[in-house]
View 1 (cartoon, rainbow, N blue to C red):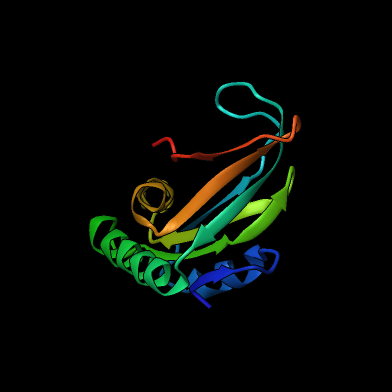
View 2 (spheres, one colour):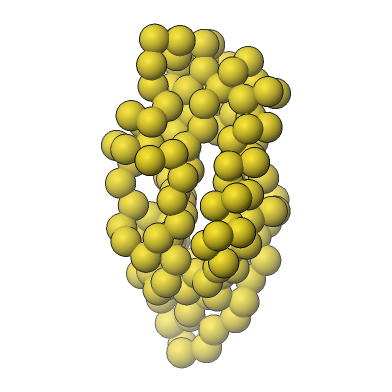
Length: 139
């Protein structure tokens, strides 16, 4: 599995296995978690992610293909949750492997930055006070 958009809890191990191999001298992972405060310091109870899985998967593949070209043959695998998540739950996971560590780090950062801008997944913050708001992803 190299790409997944799912309501199930994320598992980093299949992403790592999907990208590692004899060409990989460096492998970097990133996991994004639901945190307890919003960017404007409101107390957060959780997040709700909604998306269009088919469009999201196509864009994740495109981002991975771009990273391969830009970062020396880096291989990238990405999984993103949908649905209601509580504080502390993993929302996104990325594994990037490349012949050298610098390219692996760069590919991983590129993947998360591009995902936030381009992928058809939207988030709504649920606040402790009972309110909620749709939020744009900061780049």
